[in-house]
Length: 328
Image 1 (tube, one colour):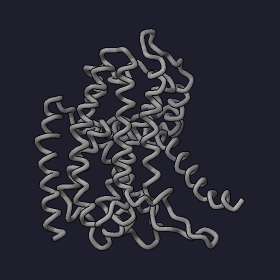
Image 2 (cartoon, rainbow, N blue to C red):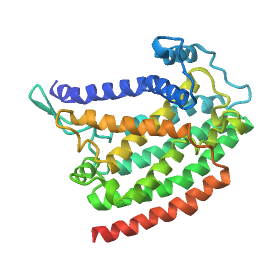
Image 3 (cartoon, helix red, strand yellow):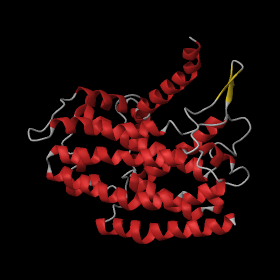
Image 4 (cartoon, rainbow, N blue to C red):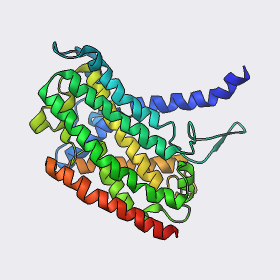
């Protein structure tokens, strides 16, 4: 019985995080469509609910009630597994993400994380890399030329940008002398890493855009030449799982940018709880990701590769060198 009571806080935190992540795409889709509309000088969703607030709910009901179509020539098992493989890693990543300083609940100290891993950053980078397998399986199982081309692009893009992304955080690890995210945040007391790691932040941010396959790096699902890319043949609930995974990757990247370079929950006003201050910063980065989508055009494929190998990789190596001098 005592063991069950010990697990209760962990189960409650898991339920809150999973529930929040499942519902998060609803407001985010509305926000993204509104941002796009205002940038393009139009009203955006206005029909369902006040200023279209219930539009994401209507879209969700539509997707969940649509026919779950599987192409005749598709590999049925892999076709069914692919959306789940793409969706699981963004959820698992939140095991290692802290949300603030410990709080007191009924006289008991509760940590605002599921597990404060001492290799949390390495765990997040490793698990994030698994998500590409969902894209590969979706492209291969669909037995469609558009889907296969989209998945091949995704593989090349992930390989090209995972390397500079991993290198860009080495400077942060060297300064904090730890891969534990709480220690990395604590090391930014008084001076955020963005001040001493501007190159690392630039590389991480741009590589993150490519990893999330957001404009200007959304070549795996380029609507103009690939239909919809690797999920061209998907519909209904399976398609919604891919969309959910895409938004969750954006949220994960926003958290990582804040925790690694912008002091995490540090530096906020005294009247705000640390978790709220962290979420405000994360919200700002989510807005930046959405703003970039409707500001920049899509790169050509050769430009995508050039940026990854000839710009970001040398910059990330230079950042490691500079960080070494700073530590010495």
